[in-house]
Length: 34
View 1 (cartoon, rainbow, N blue to C red):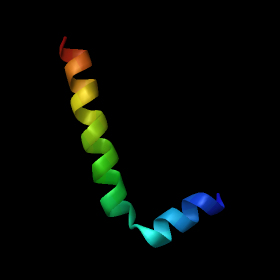
View 2: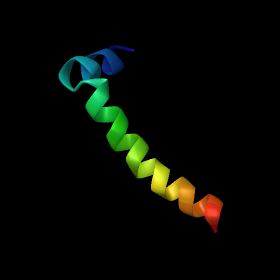
View 3: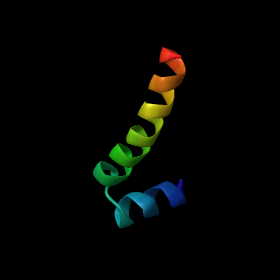
View 4: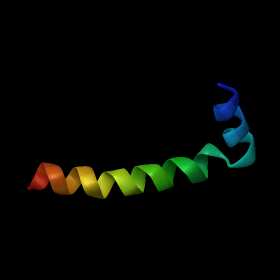
């Protein structure tokens, strides 16, 4: 839990969330479409 808190304090969830979602969205979308 400490790692998560540090990451949030260092990099806001707004920047980390979109990056992870964007990378996962295309992969999941393609997999579901195919």
